[in-house]
Image (tube, rainbow, N blue to C red):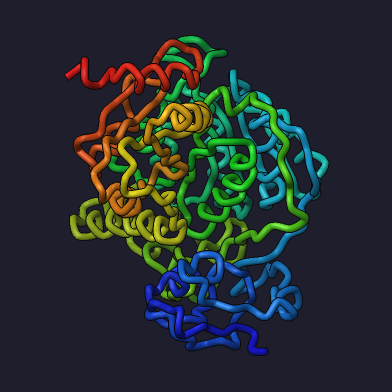
Length: 458
């Protein structure tokens, strides 16, 4: 059997396989152009909507190389996890495990409710070769240290809550401008300001997406359960290293402290930062097989020039060049859109006769799931679309799911933030918000539908 093959009767030439393949096995229309280069990472088969790609499983293990460290290194590798099997864990506890499994070897942070357990979990770095844990004096220095470690070649992370995210704004923009990969976890609590430090809310959705001055674009992921906390943390590190962007993992206090059984696999597919001494350091990559330019580590043999000012592809300052400013911001925005194509989130199929659709993220999804089940038993036609990727927002997928024009209801624990993202796609979307510092319960959602609250408001 061939190492990789395509069922031509199923292939629709969408090109998704080419967009995620790290070794240019596929052409732009899905044709096989370099099958011998296939590493059997499985991304193409995973993303193919028609299941047209066939991999020879007998070749899988031997065709995936070990992590390299020299010129031309990087790419996809299968990595052994530290604690495979079933575990009862909270969201915060779970996030620390995949961070270590993904190769995070530096953590700098300041303890803050309700994110402190992530910091405690990352103390394990001190027991790992080349690992380093540092408690910083505040969140400003925490992210500064993370950026420094990332530029020195480490996978690096920090965690905080709303007030800490506010302090990180300038350094978030610096990480975006310098294309520095890093992961930031924000555990949302009730605010503004100190607010209710131990209470749940979702008031950081828009700040996470738009945090940082000067149109600083980044990726924002939003787990809805403990299994997501594991898988999306792995995804966060992969996306950050692949596209050289800050990635924010956004959870609320309920997800952070909820405990569930999570199945941790024996191995994970992990992306290690690509490095080629012959490539430029900033902007779009010259090698199409990569999603970002090559990043040599500080302390190596190659000179790396890093500046927060507008710069060219070598990092040389160009603060008075309008064309270079346009090029810089365009290339950063383009990476975020390319990341959206890689994520390729698919909305659940909504039946054409469905009258109402709920859209939610975080712990509200859990309440909505139960509410939908109970409403169905009472004859109400309601479906749910859980949003796990907030930036880039899945506009096209949402449009496809809502083609039959149902009544759309965005439910969230704030004064209304996710609703603005949805209304950019579906202007008629309705809003149900709660900002009490307590969870939205299924009965609240059921009452909303049975009493037709939106009709009374209008």
